[in-house]
Image 1: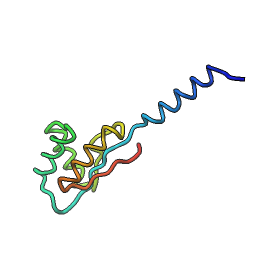
Image 2: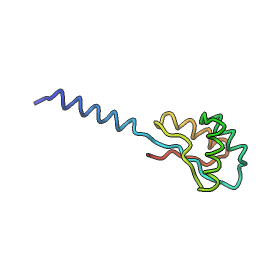
Image 3: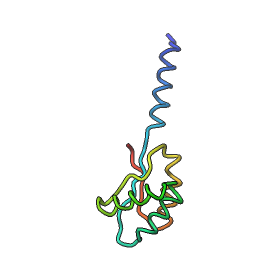
Image 4: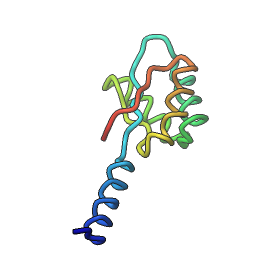
Length: 94
């Protein structure tokens, strides 16, 4: 028998799964300068100068850093812009 409440619960679960947070991870390289990384993070990821500097240091010392979290549809253009500008980045599931 059809149960409207069960269907509503199922739809809510699907919506939550679809909006599951992802993270944009930036990786260290031996090519790009700190200034370039900071500029790209500010321009494409909308980091403040302080956030961008901190992220650049994390990347330098730890090899990678999460520079943004959110939905894939929001992170994808940021990731593409970073990669198009010579940085190494990818989106990972949180």
